[in-house]
Image (tube, rainbow, N blue to C red; front, top):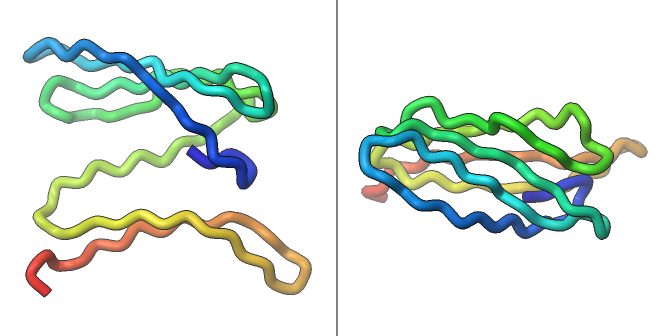
Length: 100
């Protein structure tokens, strides 16, 4: 995950039980402080959601989850931009045909 331009490694240990909702506690360290994010998804992959987060300096974090269901090749990119004194981060998801 990237927070304010800083890459943060998240880890989780999850036991998957057939036909049960999966709940994963993702943990890591950001600027020397522990962070945690709880991810949940239905047994069939339905309703993926970040249901809780505790991230220092980011009390109202908004997550964008995208579920891939096509036969296309999906690529995700994160980058930065600078234009006229404005800077920021951009996120792009590209879908391509797998038979190119």
